[in-house]
Image 1 (tube, rainbow, N blue to C red):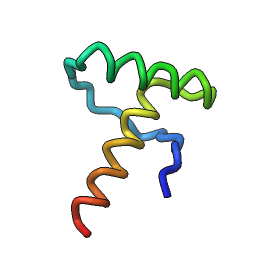
Image 2: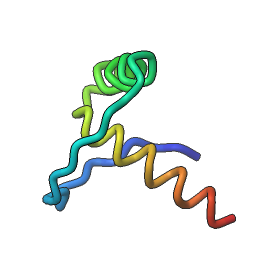
Image 3: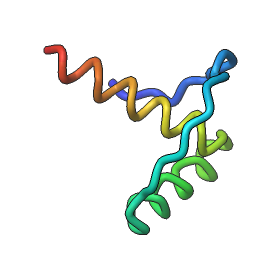
Image 4: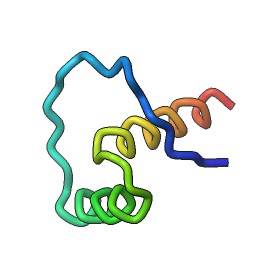
Length: 54
C-alpha cells in the first residue's frame, strides 16, 4: 500500500524536471495530505523502487 511518509534525513539536493501534468498532480497530492512536495516525491520514488524489486 502506498503511504506518504515524513522524511527527516533528506539532505541531498537534486534538480528534477517534471512534465507539467505530473508536477500539478504531485502538488495536489501534497496539498490534500498537508505534506511537503518533497515528501510526496520521495514517497512515490520509494514506492516505485520497492515495487520494481518484486
